[in-house]
Image (cartoon, rainbow, N blue to C red; front, side, top):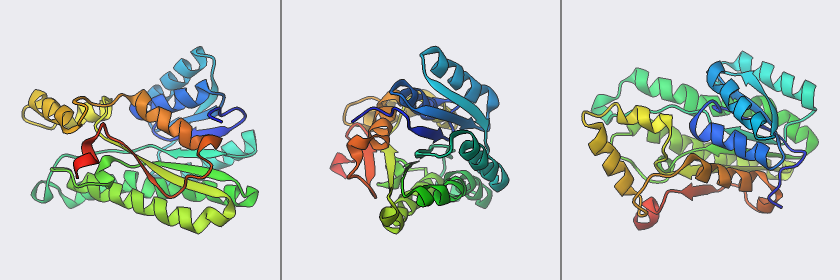
Length: 255
């Protein structure tokens, strides 16, 4: 039930961190994976690592902000594979700042990737899934889609939006044979988090505080998040839709 043999999967933002781990994990249990990213070097590195471990897939350059690129990616996948079974909307960016330290440009920049990017990519693949009456969309949200996080105004705003998109889509398309869920990680050791840490005056103090937020006393690992995506992508989760899958080391348990 947890195998992904013969499934065709596309992962956005797969050039590093959680996205790379997802692509490698899915390929490791039998999926054919389209590794996509606007960072071609990172995406090709993920593909190399995936292939070296015996997985199958290919790289597609994709900036989720660009509707034309999204349309081209969908056309390529349908032409080469005939279908897409699972779409993993993982691409995302962040920002550190409260209301007074967040500009309109900051908010627009995050919205363009974190929300509109999910919209753009899903919208081009959804008609093919509806036609086949089969599909699975997994959106990467955050613990910041479940609870408020200090100094993450723009990020939380966009991730709460992703959770809303997920729930609405799950209801709208359950009758079309399509499941839609989102994954909500806590802090995870990735280049993304490392970049946020560099925005603090004292990165090491910020790292210690971030680690202590989780009840388990540490940050998560990318492969721990990827395991949840494999579950949601597999037939083992066939009765799961419209949910926020929280993987936060206990962060939200006391909220």
